[in-house]
Each structure stands twice: as structure tokens, then as C-alpha cells.
Length: 221
Image 1 (cartoon, rainbow, N blue to C red):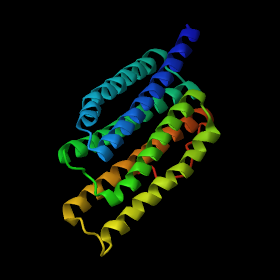
Image 2 (spheres, helix red, strand yellow; image 1 turned 60 degrees about the vertical axis):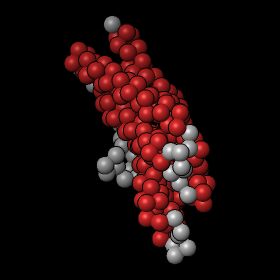
Image 3 (tube, rainbow, N blue to C red; image 1 turned 90 degrees about the vertical axis):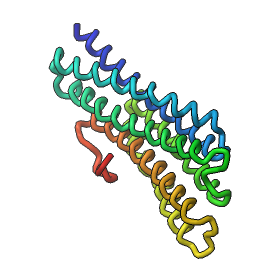
Image 4 (cartoon, one colour; image 1 turned 120 degrees about the vertical axis):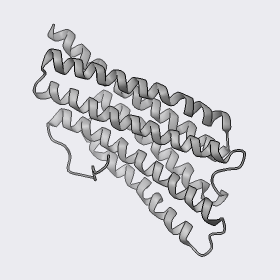
């Protein structure tokens, strides 16, 4: 019975890692749609978001069943609770990729971004996908050291996000208010995506060590 129970815990972690891989792919496609004004790819991300929601619901149902039927303690309890919280963060990552795809669709056939800021978003997209894929690997491997280093990688995302404000506030900005609003919102979507990836990694540290890392800002994660 206990062996079957621990198999269920491992399956939960695998499902969470798979879900994290799904939102990495979603953000990859959403970024491509944004930069290339690719309506078909945007629609693919939008329609695929329900699958992420379904996986999160399944993970929650299984987790609550384990809590009710097995009454886990210590590390096992931390695992179940961490999976529940992490699944919520991963679902939000999927929602943020969805927002990017909807922005691409809303401005189609035009690009949602002026050409001179597109390189910033290409880099933010690259970082976002890397963070999500790293988080998926951390979940599978329970790699605490790697989890603790993820926030350092997220700093690059924060730097670009801050720089975008200086770009749109510069007197040389020639693209008007609507474009500035789009850049501001889209930059925020990527920045929050990175924050959620860090949050997922922190949950892995909690499972292994019993302590939440003291780095970063958990507010509104």
C-alpha cells in the first residue's frame, strides 16, 4: 500500500513537470505569434490553454484525495501541498502566455509591437521559456541547488522589464500611447511569468528541505 502511495506522489510530480513543459511551449508559441504576427499560432495557444487548466484540475483532485485518504505527514505532506500550490502558479503561467497570444490576435494583421522593441521581447520570450523548462527539470530531479539559482536567471528578465519603461518614456518614442500601453502590458506578462517559474522552483526546495527559501518576493505569486 505504501509503495503504491509513493508511486502516486511521484506521478503527481511528473504531471506537474509535464504541465510546466506545456506552458513553456505555450509561451514559445505565443512569443513567435507576437513577433511574427502569426494568427494561426496565436489561435493554437488560445485554444490549448484549456488543456493546461484541465491538468491543473486533475492534479488538485488527486492531491486532495491523497490528503483525505492517506493523511500524509512530514515530507509526503510537503510534497502534496507544494504540488497544489505549484500547479496554481503553473496555470497562471499558462494564462500569461494566453494573454500574449491574445495580444497578437487582437492586433493582427499588424504587429502588436513596434519593430524597435521586438528584440527585447524576443529575449524576454527566450528567458521565459528557459525558466519554465528549468523549473520542469527541477521538479523531476528535485535539484535544490538548481532551484536556488533560478532567481538569478530571472534577474535578466526583470532588467529588461525595467528598461522597457525607459524606452517608452523617452522623448524619442514615436509610436504613440496605444503602442506604449501594449509594451507595458506585454512586458508585465513576461515579468510575472518569470516570477511564477521561480515560485515553482521554490516549492521544490520546500519539499526537499522543509523550508521556503528567503529570496525573492512571494507577494501575489
